[in-house]
Length: 349
Image 1: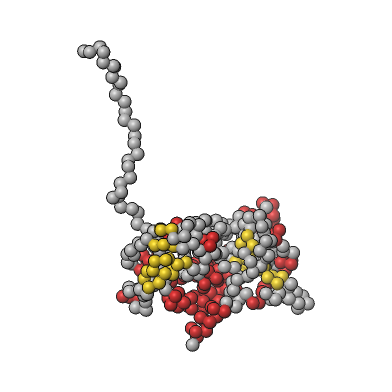
Image 2: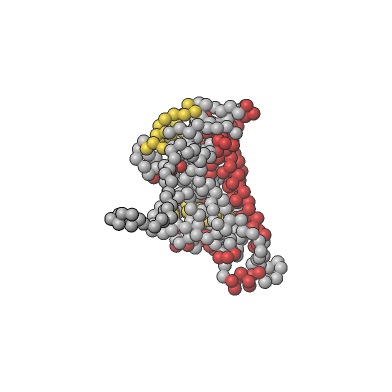
């Protein structure tokens, strides 16, 4: 044995190593709404132009997954769930639960609140950016009238569905877009008032920006700068049909038919579930602020002398946003925009 050789190190356990990424390894498939139709959709790389705050990447940034360009979180919900008894002080909650049957302020404990996580409807449809276009055209994926044959429109277009939950670009032509808007528009108008939980007269007339400041609400009807620097956001004047963005998103945003139908059903279901909870817990619809008095709609927005309330406010039970309006503006909210009114008139002809 050669003594000049350095002593060998004792055998050691090999260190675990991270395997190199296999370029040939199949990727997890992207899930798109088009799988509802039972067919595969070819994923294309497209160029997407910048659409204001909606896209935060350079112009013509090549992508495969469109949702990657729509940076920023989805529409947030408020900091607390409206009508949730957990927001009520323990002594107040217990006192009201022990009031005699028939008392207007009595509450019933143990009912399931349907939206304690404060998830707004239409969360995956951003308020900004009604429309999106891919620079590279594609074929419209909408099903034609012969749905059983599973054939699509195939009209060439650069318009795409703006729902963030798409795993890939989904093309939608103007004709199919307008046809879907006509069908959904009638339905939205028919349920618009049922989405609202009105504040009582006392809360409405004392309402100001400070009442919303730290609650992380989206509010329509306040000056745009009324909530600057606050968690809540002033969204400008009330929107057509619903006052909040629910009607505008369902009618004006470019959405594929499966998403448009899904979101309409979601809006209706969320509002109905929360209304059922309020009635079961409080015995009637009550003001979302004080949780005591009935809403102003119970008196048709008139005081004891028959004069209209100077201010009206309501919570959308679907998106959990607030709408504030004066006596002159409130009756006009239900009307659709001029373009939507034109589409609905064409449907009647």
